[in-house]
Image (tube, rainbow, N blue to C red; front, side):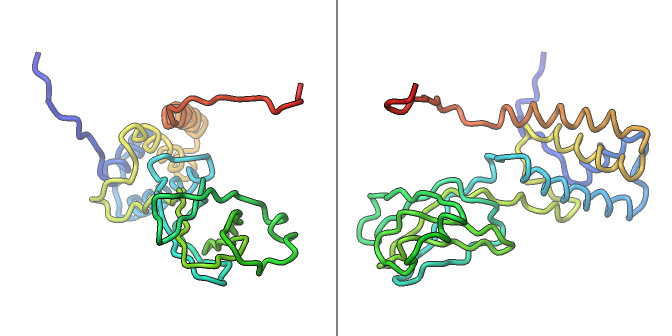
Length: 221
């Protein structure tokens, strides 16, 4: 029995749209069909950011700090910061953990201008995310963090999506459901159920393999 010898299967955006339309019971025949489907696909990618972590969109990034400056604008494609450290330019081998605090906790810091090695950060998740550090940096250290970023837009129909192969079934099922809302209402419930099943399966696989050890706090029963 002959095998292909390849493991590179992927779909162009146009093919994703074609597959989704076929699941709705018809074909994409006009330029507007392609345009409305691509718009729905971009909305679908935005919805995935609300469902939890997409591991392939986590990036290790850095921000150079400035002495006596406590706030910094970050990239607009940043969804959230998962963990962070700082390190000195004179010694890049030593990372110092920076703990995340809430808006209220940052607001309640009485003297935010206190300078020192940052030990806490608050991320204001606006359209342009803003990072606040406490204490205010006293040197040009570097803030290093794992950031959850947006999935790239679909773009041209000849592009492939910024989605790993294991999420291709979920992507096509989700787009079919989104198209059904607009063009095939009689299939909405079926396609929604198929999408949710595919997403749960893909999300369950898209997880870290590290072991978790829970240790009770001293004195807690």
